[in-house]
Length: 336
Image (cartoon, rainbow, N blue to C red; front, side, top):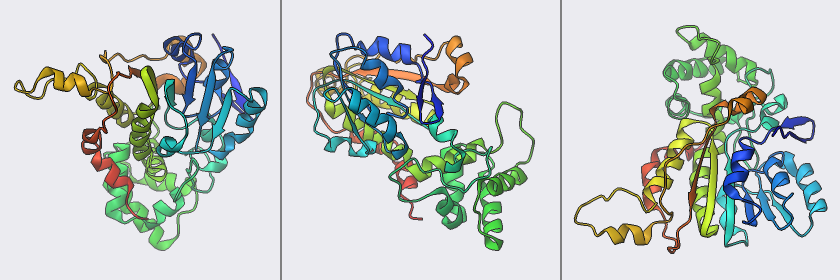
């Protein structure tokens, strides 16, 4: 199936759409939350099944035009809220059949050079997805050298974070960094060796700044916790991730809060784990895009789809998830 939807002037391909539809079974499972509405790719296809209803959310106000079109077309079946993942618990909806997350940067955001996400443009540094407290411009010009190093190293997995951070501070001490091209030149100057065509030398630093500015890890962790509260027993949570930090969090959550979790002690009764598990048996299966989809939409190549099924147990807050990834939460809470 080759499905393309458009939001405003930018083309949008919903990633792994066929797999999402197969797992979520909209012909029999009716109540959905689309947590990353974007261009509306998932929602539009799900709404083709006449008995479905969707609450869609997105932090980006650029999607409002597309959302209003669906609200007009399906006034009783589609509702949109401009909120972040962390605000999902405040929405009046429960006993949901399927909750879908398509994480990371959308094509709508990346292709709009004015938003400053792309290192291929020469635009004002911004990188905000919506409902932000800071922009990349503020972060790059105000974070201390040590904090810049931590952000770039931890969130971007950049080996040369120290040199990049130092050169950023040296440059801004002489002149404020305003646009993407200035930052690109600083990063390229900082790299010890030339990179292959497979990865641009700026990719990791731009990713790190984007994650930090949008508090993407904090939002993801709060989002999947809030989503789990909203699922009915047997309901499914489906998450498409694009980088290793996201996938590591999703895998840990599904594995360690499911009924097949390894017993931490042979003295702990097995039913103690099973009785508090948030999810049924988790198979740890990763679905990836087909070659056909990658050829059609190259940006889908790094996508990983995982899903879990909600158990019948009462919700117990997963404190261990917060503890496990607290270093990311602390990093994203740095004041700028």
